Length: 228
Image 1 (cartoon, rainbow, N blue to C red):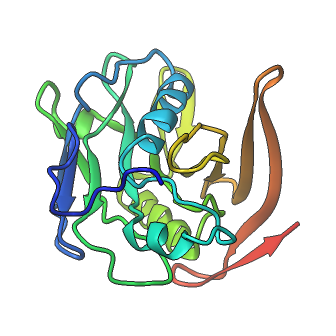
Image 2 (image 1 turned 180 degrees about the horizontal axis):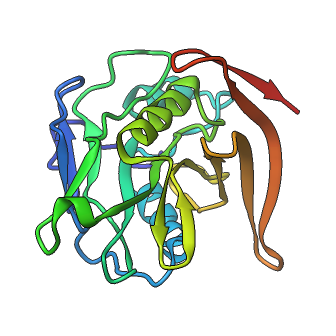
């Protein structure tokens, strides 16, 4: 059985634990030893194996006889991918909750803003909230609502040179077990388009894109999901 670490263990380098519901407004950046990267795609693909390799970020599948043990110890981690005034892309420190109070799901309280001491706070562009889903399931309604609320704070896109970069949320998944996690893809939601996408890592073809649904907001509080 793979080694599992509890909440009393010191967090890995670059990971900050918050009490559920008590995350501050700001989280520091950049993540030590991570970037920077010339494109947000490069930053995203670097963040995927890093986050999935963190303790208990990937659990066994529900049909495994030890699933309940792994699930009880599983942990969700989250961070911001953001742009700097030089047009480079960084990741914030990684946030996680000290405990997971809901036995049915894993959550992570991510501060809404990044503080990078090299730049004024209002000079940063917010691109992605990235996080892991220990079982590899699709984006939750909580994920969708969270990034919509972040778009209301930061704007649903920002200008980077001649390009308009939309804000979005990413959930990484791995087909491997906790002893051998691999970055096999991610789910994505972009409020500006409403698209729900699944990206699969293909060793030969690169990233394979599949749209599996769309989110329709009825008003600023309510939405419906149409699965395809």
